[in-house]
Image 1 (cartoon, rainbow, N blue to C red):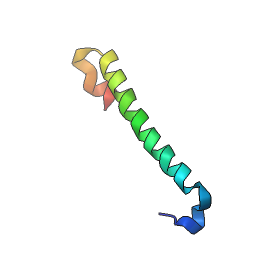
Image 2: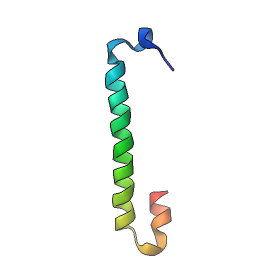
Image 3: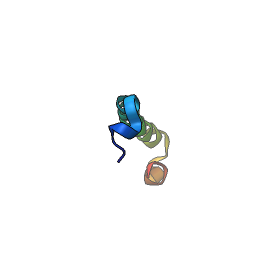
Image 4: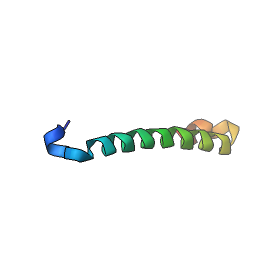
Amino acid sequence: MPGYATIGLGAPARLLQGISVNGEYGTSAIVKAKLFPTHSRALGVG
């Protein structure tokens, strides 16, 4: 993992970006699970 000297002042922004992407993935998985038919939900979310 790159240190502060490599990333510089952008490190906090990258951390927040990673957290927000992780939250979006969970939300989109829930939406996809609701939209897929009951018998094939595992195929759509996995």
